[in-house]
View 1: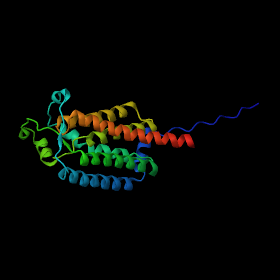
View 2: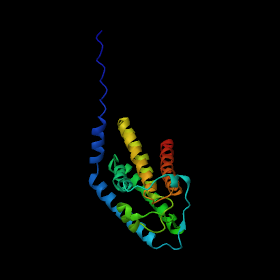
View 3: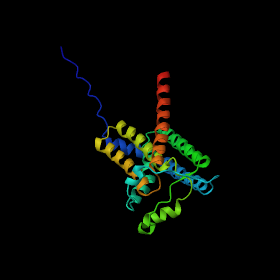
View 4: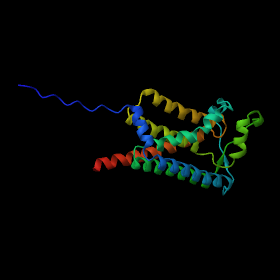
Length: 228
């Protein structure tokens, strides 16, 4: 009796091709949506920053804040956030995932801005000669006011790290991509302290906000799957 040949299972798409396919999907919508979203956020952020309804509360320092040294070089990592956060929507596999990412980012921004408005906070006046740090001197002249706690810089970097981690796992990307993702996010978090834009309590607040928003979305997804 002749045995029938067994069907060969389809070969999984290489991770780099899967990555390219994700980037190519809805790329115009992603590009326009990300640009409009970030621009709109900046308009609201700076308006709230320059129009606090009350005197901002100065955030207290911790031992960690004294331990982290000021670094002009940290400005590069600090500014890289705006490219980093664009990776999450860029790697969305379809419209549903893109919309979910946009919703969570908008929710996180709305919560942060609401806190800035009702409870304005600011970092202490550090005994630093900013003329010795040219890159930071410009930042200090631009970003002033009561938008310290929670750090949305940290919130968006942690949120992006969580989303990117899931996306990279879904395409079976190698471990080094996960490490790169985590190191990039950690570098941005570190830069918020090294540029003296935030203190440790701001960092913890931003981290908590990102985790809660991500957990809320994950819990809702599991509930939908359980009812299916």
